[in-house]
Length: 159
Length: 159
DNA sequence: GTTGAAACAATGTGGCG
DNA sequence: CGCCACATTGTTTCAAC
View 1 (cartoon, rainbow over the protein chains, first blue to last red):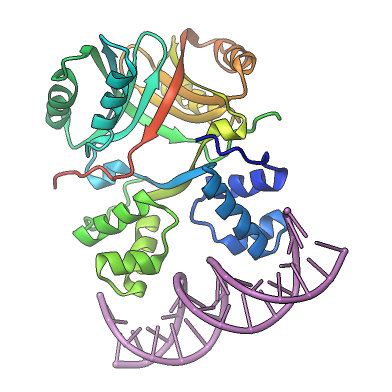
View 2 (view 1 turned 90 degrees about the horizontal axis):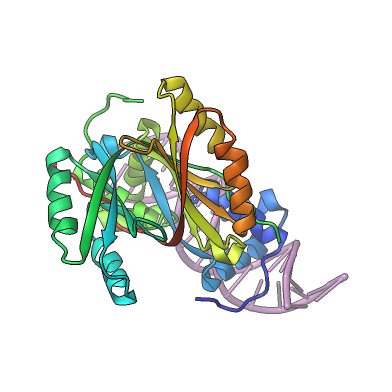
């Protein structure tokens, strides 16, 4: 995935900052903000998609209004840390409709699974069916998510 | 924030699913997918933004290619669970450039702070300056994030 | 919700520094 | 080589139904 490319310049980072704050902003608006012609700006965005710097975009939603009244983070420890076991866990869990995201961690817990579900019955079912039912799973701990906030600004990294 | 509105219908959910998978998809493409005229589709998207169902959109980025070679989840316990303490913690942390997102949790840990930083020196500095330096913070534990994956599909909730 | 027209944005080409 | 201007194509948006 390391598509050996030239480093991003400051204009690239400015473009990413605009898109990070609002992924639906128009190319023309970005171009104005960063001081480029629309065609040049679009060229850079396309290039960053090709390079894999930009990997996609997501909507932020109020899951509560959609019926997802419970959100939880499930900490999971597995008995076996082979690459196959780890990859399979992620690949099995990510497509499940309840799953929003999956972290693979170093440290005490191996995974953190962020889920959104209807209600506590649905949460319990999910944990039994998708997590504790797996033979490699050793330890599970579920914490309710009261609030989840995403920064609107791109992290800045020193060159 | 509960803008008492009519429930979302199935077409609304289909629109959200399209935008969730790719927030930059064009309105015309959504309209085609869900079988609506572009004008009606746009009207629904606007309505859902007004209602607060759609709260924003973000780019997904490869932080590594941006120089964010270390990502971590910092678990934090605070000594005081008043609303003011909790709100202030989130409000102080979210604007920091290293912070990607903040979970407020029930359970043993009160917060989980997801950060992306340059290197381990930067991580150590962040933890000292932004977390352990706070008087209300009781307990801190940092876990490296080896991998983070976001589901491309919207959770489905039973009506 | 739809249609259709006008305004606007995205995108490809060629030329300039 | 990257940027810009311009022309073409496609998209958004609004009014009328």
